[in-house]
Amino acid sequence: MKKNPNVAVVGATGAVGEAMLRVLAERDFPVREVRALASARSAGLEVAFGDSALLVEELHEGSFSGVDIALFSAGGSISKEFAPAAVEAGAVVIDNSSAFRMDADVPLVVPEVNPDDVAWHKGIIANPNCSTIQMVVVLKPLHDAARIKRVVVATYQAVSGTGKKAVAELLSQTDAIRRGNLPVSEVYPHQIAFNVLPHIDVFRDDGYTKEEWKMDVETKKIMGDDSIAVVATCARVPVLVGHSEAVNIEMESALSVEDARSLLASAPGVALVDDPAGNAYPLAIDAAGKDPSYVGRIRRDATVEHGLAMWIVSDNVRKGAALNAVQIAELLL
Ligand code: 25A
Ligand code: L14
Image 1 (spheres, rainbow, N blue to C red):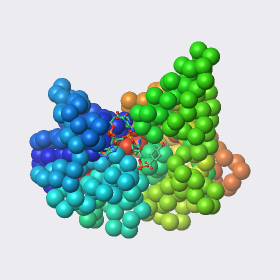
Image 2: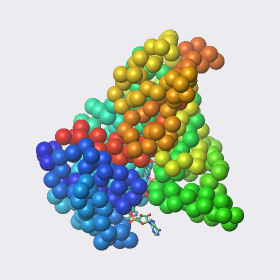
Image 3: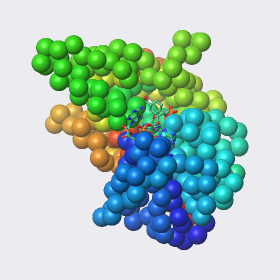
Image 4: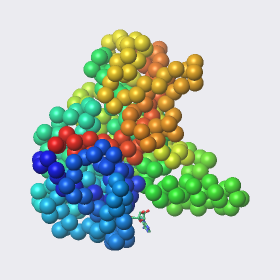
């Protein structure tokens, strides 16, 4: 990879695309030129990149000439349609959609967990699901120390994961209800304001949602260990930014609460916030706009032999999508 690559952001006007541009600028990623691509709807608009503004161009097959790294976040169908053209043009694609994550020849990478997997890419590297990323960053050091056999997780996911229109829907429903008007639901099948929906992504035949299934299969692939059993319940809550997760793990060998805390206090990408006496634990509003995966409420789970329970929170748009993708691009350099 060149020292000063040309970078394209596909879906540059979306929640994740805008964050990708922000993170590239904040981290002084050594770009030569950045191209902002989106649908015809957004062509001609401007998006911010550091102190400058980029003109948004309509995405087409010829958009990738001269591009070295293409960051995709415009949904799975756009990735399937245009990632091959980007690879053909010589770019490495870092794809945030679920289109290629489980393909055997596509690495699925969280830089704190499996950075070496970047090496065997054949043009496409997949960025995992947001809920999976923030969890594996915390589980990896515990797995290395005591081998995790089983994970039981319940998520409390923010609306920004669905994109800007879901953020607008939560705000407008909240406003409507406060004014005594009828809330309108267009993005989600039910009212999200003042409610909790046990439904993220689509339902599968086995009764789980695709989001719950992703947490299982993606965790195994990223950690490189098919023996880890994962069962998830994923819920949408009326939070703007920051996914929260209640995670219970069963390990093969003993690991005390104190040892888990000290391992996590020095783990890359992890921030420990665990002082119950001072009411200190990870919160979505504190994680928003920040990089780490926050962990706290670490305590013994005495229902199994070697068990721990914890609470994990991270910014789903940053570490869950944009930041992780830019960190992968940094590994390519
Ligand atoms: O398939 P997946 O993997 O499940 O992903 C589905 C969606 O989830 C988001 C992301 O939405 C993605 O599209 N997403 C994926 N992974 C995520 C993660 N880890 C994640 N979100 C959080 N965490 P998004 O809203 O973030 O980004 C959408 C971007 O994609 C662009 N896009 C859409 N179709 C395109 C396209 N780009 C090129 N070609 C196409 N055919 C989209 O650009 C956006 O940048 P846009 O131009 O369509 O929208 C620009 C503005 O217009 C508004 N808008 C959107 N839809 C409509 C609309 N306005 C009017 N009518 C509409 N139908 C948007 O609000 C935006 O401001
Ligand atoms: O990346 O929160 O697979 O609605 C798909 C569901 C991203 C989040 C993915 C949501 C997710 C999205």
